[in-house]
Amino acid sequence: MGCLVSTPKDSGGNRRRPGNIGEVSVYVPGLRIPKSVDFFQSLGGHLSKTLVERLTALRTRIVVMAGQEAPTITRTRRKTATQHGGSTLADLHQALEDYLPVLLGLVTDGSQLQYKVQFIWVNQEDDAEETAMFNAWYEVLSVLHLMAMLLLSQANLLLLPRTSADGYQPKVSEESRRASIDIFLKAAGYLDCAVRHVLPQLPSELRRNLPVDLAEGVLRALCLQALGQGVDIQLGMAIDSTKATLAVKRRLACEMVKYWQQAQDNIMNLPLSNGWGEKHRLFIKWKYIEAKAAAYYYHGLILDEGNTEKSHGMAVAALQAADEYFKESKRACEVFNAAHPLSRNPPVWGTMKYLSEKIPKDTSSKVRINRDLYSYEKIMETAPTLPDFALALKPDEYQLPPADPSWNENVQLSHIGINQVNHDKR
Image 1: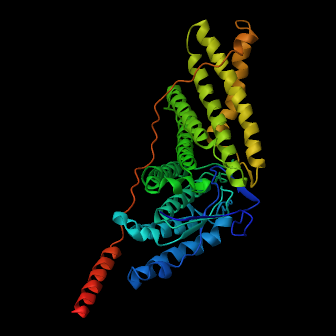
Image 2: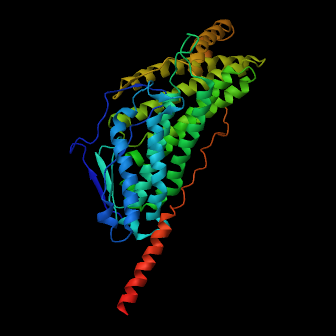
Image 3: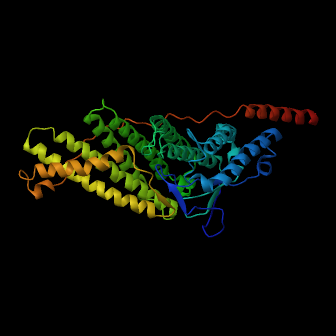
């Protein structure tokens, strides 16, 4: 059940894309925008006027806010950002949270009302301009996706370096870094819930016809991206800490590789052909290469602590691999920024600021020291396998809220109406 309508990309101008999205620490592949629906036409004969009016008001608020802000919300807007992200982001997120419990009344206990309304959303990563479905679970999925994208946008604002009060190089405060980790886990929780609890509610035919923005692979990749960027922040904080050991840093770097590798595995075969989608793929590729540079660097430092010729040789090979991946990551970054919509890097900070200085220096030093012991061929042997650690960072446990209490009142009114009809018949 649930009719599908997809509009080709050349059919209209609803999808407004910026030519440049400014500085990017966290990539957000555009914001899907809801289009207006007429709840009175679809539900007027099934629900109380009060409930239909409430559904209409809550969703109209989202349509207006998303329509006004989506074209600019992905751009860097430092001046309007509050301490914990943009106020617009928070307002739109709150509007979605207010709407979700009322929306869920349409799907409670398998209600047939879930098939009465045609919900329409403008896509960003899919070739189709927009996708419409007569299925309220599609609306729930779209709401969770937008809530996650708003959080990733908020994290991007938090992680753009700002000029410090002392006038030194721009940096990201520890408070912002810690807040961003919480945001990443919350966004991952929305996406994980979407994959595990909402997608299964849709018939297989509708799942196959979802826009690529909402494809299971993209949702999983976004979830893993959030976790990978969370670990990146953790690694940066460990680098700044005098108490964090090399073993801790290596573990975090190796975990980061696994998150980005899994993200790439989920997205690589999807038809992400347009601007936002292709740029999304390039972002994940860049971050995966960057993570490997960090992991091989710390793995090399630990191997170098060994006392055997073999361990030193493996350390050199690992550091050499780190240096090659670091160079490759810079090229991948350039390709990402050059892809439309254009973007640019913020001032380097955190993990990559440290590693951009240490990897070339330490690799050069180790290769020079060990040049007499090891031939060039031996140094350039295949890099040693990275240790395999269990992934520690997990999405927040997010559960869909219960249906709004106003639905109970609607059921009571329905019973009153039925009883009144029966009384009139008598």
